[in-house]
Amino acid sequence: MNFNLQAPDLPYDFRPSSFPMKSIISLVIGLLVSGAAFAQHRCVENGKTILTDRPCASQPIPAASGGANAVNHVGDAAYATTHGAWRGQVQFMAKSGTTVINEAHAVVPFVIELDPQGRVTGTGNNCSIKGIAAPSVADTITSLDITLTGCAYAGFNRQMSGRLALYTAKKYVDFSVQSYDMQRRPTGYYEIKGTLRR
Image (cartoon, rainbow, N blue to C red; front, top):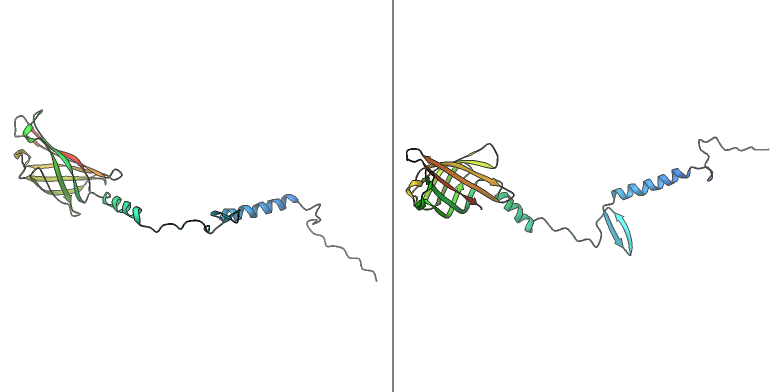
């Protein structure tokens, strides 16, 4: 009995000399690259550098949220809106025509507070301030309509309008209100302005 065994016809000849070496090299490189793509940490263990998807044993544990960063976020939140109290030095200045009225001029501590409902209160230069605040065309600008009473210089006892412009990154507001007295000859001009912070 004589058996004639022949290998079945295969699409490739798997003899080492004919198997495409480029395919093997491509496969090995592909596996290495795909493994490295998922690795997020480069660690040195026992003198060898390895890539892994887990933190290295010698890597410090990240700090819990809070601390200085939490303080910064709270500080940033304070400058996210014009609501609340603002303090600083402001200049009171008045003119008759183009002439500065010296007795009206003062640079003094000033406080103004805006509540979320739009009520405005404040003090400075013996003035008591009351009025309203309203949103403006820009989110960082609040329009003001205030009335001053009891001021050291009586000319400031009047209604004034202006704005509070918020500069979040620089952490301050630019406060400015003005009023004209058209009944005065020459025309009277009154202004209060300054930079305020929390």
